[in-house]
Length: 578
Image (cartoon, rainbow, N blue to C red; front, side, top):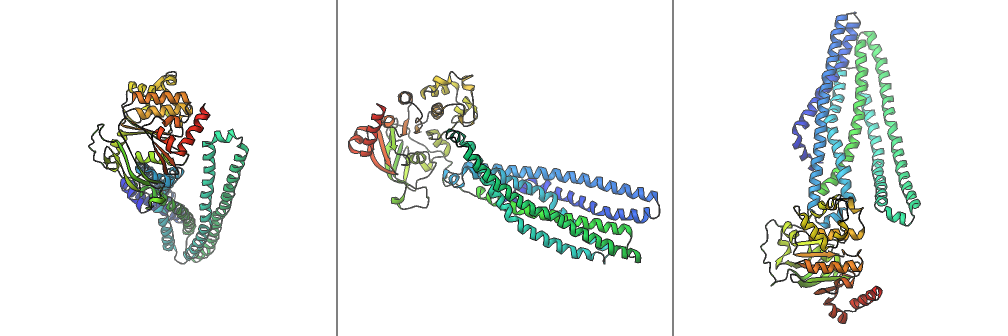
């Protein structure tokens, strides 16, 4: 919570003015029972109409003034809470975008979404409560006790008996309900997870006719959530009646002993009514205090989760200074020198790393092919080329300079990648194509679409480049999406193009035409990652991977002679294709 207190400085006026207005409103509220007592004791007792009207107008005026101050406080609370939540959300989102893939993998996408929404909303609620209620409750508690003591010290002893009893009840109920609140949150997470899985995997569920089983799974999780909510509601439902029961007994005691005091002349009827009002005010303040405490516990947990995101540091740090490069054909554009990598950043033993001692070089305009079974490390190497992750050992050179020396903008200008699980965003086709280069012209986009074999179907789209793409590319096929994402990577003339198994959904003829077009139209080095030998067999250099180990490296002919895994893969696929 302390780390998030810094956001209060952005709304100093609201944070200071709001409680002051609430304090004034509370003081005016506390003064009203005394004025009503005077009306009863003097106005009504002596049938003094002018006195009743005079003090009645004062009471009404005080309530109107208090109402105005309450509105100002509410306005301050709303502006401050919404504004602070917005700034926290902006800082979280900004820091998330700075994090490397390792940190995002550690948090998980669903967890980050929950922290950005639910946890920040909890902070928003707490800020509003602090401004509106935090100063009010102590004032009502202390004011009620002091004013009742000023009226009649002997009768105010009832307060000294009731307050400890109510406090003990609140503590017991809070301890009983807090574990349930945490359990409710866990059950809600389960329901949310099942819902998210079913919505994202709706096609799989329907394809295997698994709707009834998923309904049962959801109903079971939802039923557990309902039972937990009912349990905590049953306990919470007893709190207010029990408090009001004690308050009622206290009021009865006040009326009993107050009646005795009235008979002996130590108390008036108006003062007795004021006593009862202060007792009710006291009980309401204690109930509000218990709710503040519950919200404070919830907010503390949310604040901890938010701080984890805000304090997270990226493991991949980029420089700001642009690197001077010698862009010619005399030196390799990309070099791996004894590169070792493990997703466990603390791993130092080269033999236990996922990628071990990988060494190769790629000249400008050459093509590198990487092939291997699922999980062999192909995408990991692509992620190292783009510096989504940093290697644990060795070095990666770009134009002879360490890749760690490049600022992110320059690196992304040089290296372009179409990822294995690439996606399209909601918006026009033109907007999707301009992601890599904001000012890309229609001519550049169309040229890239033609190279990626996408123009054949794009030209038939309604409004062509203004065609609206649904979120996630739901209104295009898998093969169309792959060709569109390849076209997006081509825009901006990259010097190194990485295609990470991005033609897996294409038929063999389209795949062949794509490779021919890439070779003809592009003036850059290309990295082809695939499980098809036909895709990479014409590459200048082919790397064969098996569980992170390089089991073969060379040309297609060399590997047919010297690499058993490549030879078996090639002949099995060639036979199947024939």
